[in-house]
Length: 296
Length: 287
Image (cartoon, rainbow over all chains, first blue to last red; front, side, top):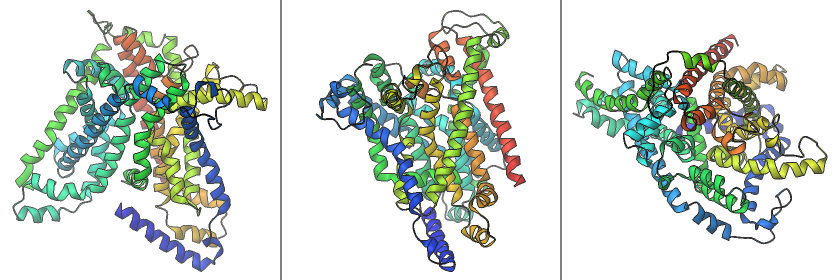
């Protein structure tokens, strides 16, 4: 976060210096481009608006293209959807899977990457690095059928198994980004700590892990988006209907009550809302986190 | 750091064991079962490469590959052209820059399955009415019910959802370009198009490569959006490879056969990614 901001402010400073040299004209806001951005933003906002108004309508207001504001708001759509999809249960399951995946991923994947980054000159760790990173190319559908059988066999066909899978399957990408970051941390820090008698575990816990904070945020955000929104993995892994996550609950709901659009949209909105709200508050953070992940 | 080599092994080996158990073992079991006639239950016998030969004679498999490639290539191109344009727009001197960035990233935090359901409604209810009103023939019935147009609906929704991520990656790239390069080009009298060709594009070459590879690889695995929009129909015209593997493997008693399909699919994806990386990186160096 800090680095992006410093870079951004340095850039603005450079910009203004350059602009002063070229005269005042370019310093001003480009309004035609702003208007263009506003028009393009509508392509994002209109479908969201449609979701909201449809969720508020009564079924008899559904005729027409569907963009007009409801003449009579029907809030019962939400309570109907709440009961029909067993919403609290699905929300809890999604929360368990997502929190579990994020916490376990950040703690374990950074640790593995630390061990690899500091030992890349050794054959075993070098092999490990390429072994994990090569798996980036393996698409999930390939291991889907056998993995389903295996998790059922191991008793992992539940939310706990699911977040374990996210942690393991994320390892490929995360080791890649963490390792690059850790290699940029000077070893002198660790050598000094060793002099003071710190163990390798202690060094990781007290020096490396705190220094990884920006990377942890990036990995955490990406894991959160993945685990919360994923559909295929829960679809094949979870066996008990009571353990359904939110996207899975929408899928089952949709195939059972296809005609009831207003209740369906209330249900979609409730499933989208939690992450959307979190995003509205943490916007800057999420975007800078994702950007950082791409630069490393 | 000789003091700690033991600790490093303890840090890495549990993860390695888990990875092997949950990723490598399933992958290898899959390769093994691709050589059998296993249905997913009951007994099985070893049949060698027979599944692989049958794949190439199976119309449903072949059409799923051609649909998947047509869809993935089209969407990759659309996403990258639009994302680069939007990223340059957001990087220009516009008002409310942060707010616009925030809005454009929204689709990426939403589940594509649910987005697909919302767009399904738009395609089958709102758009046909608009089409009738405007007198556009092909738009006045649901495009999702049209065998030749349904795939365009899937392209549109996939692009809508994933442009956000590409925009952010391109923005990150654009911010690495020093402003004085443009100043110098301005002094030399280079126009916008010339600046784009000679400065912007070459400077973000690496980001272009990453975006193209990630997008194509992602779209070759399309599943959620198709389930939500067409369910593979009308007929089997929008069945992706991932969907055929899922359906045949879990519901159709074709476990062994679909594992052979998976192995071919893996080889195809690896080959495509490697070729793409090679050619795009060679271009990068050329600039």
